Length: 282
Image (cartoon, rainbow, N blue to C red; front, side, top):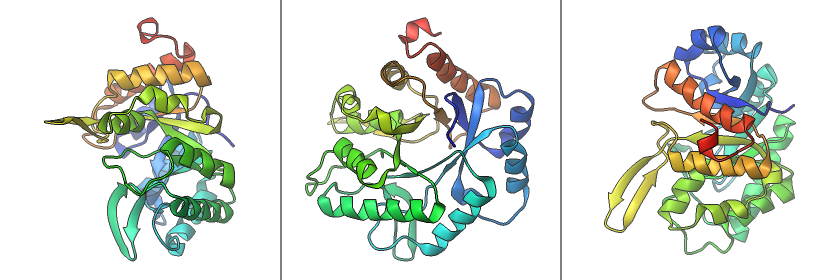
């Protein structure tokens, strides 16, 4: 299974009626897996109804793929149950860590890119794919610090994980812009080195900015519209890679449906135009 090469949105319960009545350009929905690990209730009733009409992307935020030690087997078992229940068209997780022992930190934290962490991440990806009996996509993170220990470029690290494990990649264009701005790196050079043939889904989202004496610091906040520079990078990615499933994330300060629908429509317009310059897709 694969997601349709259309625009999608991150589902929130307040959008249920609108999605049933006026989905507009939305071709698929995405949900955070951890929000659906209960046995029943309204979340599952809504998702079951929507699953009959939309392709589904299941997005994990709690596996701690980059964390030390073994994956949490109970969490992975719950994820397996959820995956079997809904048979999503895609499953993805983050190149990050979010737990230490029994403590969950409710964040997606960066890791150094070394041979040791590469081996660890590959082992974890292999385990997830074996348990779920499906390919997973690994998402590039937004980062705010660099590690002196790192010996592998981020793009090379992701490409090698995909090569060794057979996983796909989820390209978050906003994360690219955030990380590259924070580290004073050219995002176009980063994207030029990225293995687009491994991409199974794209994420787009908003970010916040703080102005520091050293320059801007961007925060992957998911609480505002997609910024114009991110739309420009996205159009260039589509021009290079062709149509790809493209999700608009908006998780904080969630807007009314017409606002999110307009963001999805903008992504859909760029997809339909093949990534032509933004002045020609309005």
